Length: 297
Image (cartoon, rainbow, N blue to C red):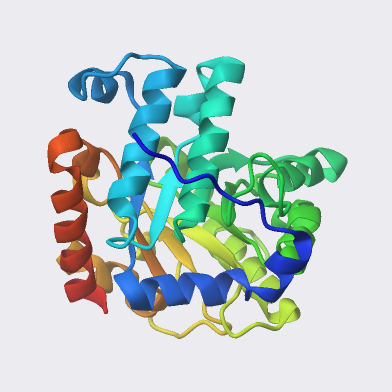
């Protein structure tokens, strides 16, 4: 496996290369909204003939990057599948992240971090600081303590041209009781309140496409979460949409599922693509990217 040695960008380079929303939009225009997950599950490593360790995770990750480059514009490494191998897993992840960014891919680190104060600020620094070992273009983040608790990573994202995807309505059924819960005063669901608060943050940042997006599962009836699908959101709101492929959502239904929120939709698919194996990976990514583009662009 040949890996291109990446050059770590300086803070000045990140600041002058356009905001996250602009780069995400450019990737979608060039390749469509498919986001290829990099999830080295134990069973996938075995199916690929790789060892279930950091070396196997690295090999799978680099092969996905190589296959995605020029065919899809976005990749999403699931950090947990590297983290399970400890420091060696993180070293592998650093190489995958750097290779993906060097290949011109928009990289969303699926880390789902969340905390308050200096702790959440440090999480943001780990994943969003230009030149950091774990630098990505965006990270997933949890607002369980409120969107206001994310002030530090939101500020860092805005300053460094990075992005965040805040969990709002997730596909796992046990989350619905919390995410559909409604505030007694406003009547808004938790999921709707997160979208509203993120939209306000994006408006304050002042970019045409907000750098702060949300995660909305494609297998959900979003109307039951009190989410308005009929009114355009300004600034444009990036939406990370897991649930396609293995979990059952279909590309051709994406526009109906998300309504006006499909404007900056990022269609995430992992296991059903990786299951093609190393020999079928390149063709599968190319065909999936074409299908998603046909359905949404």
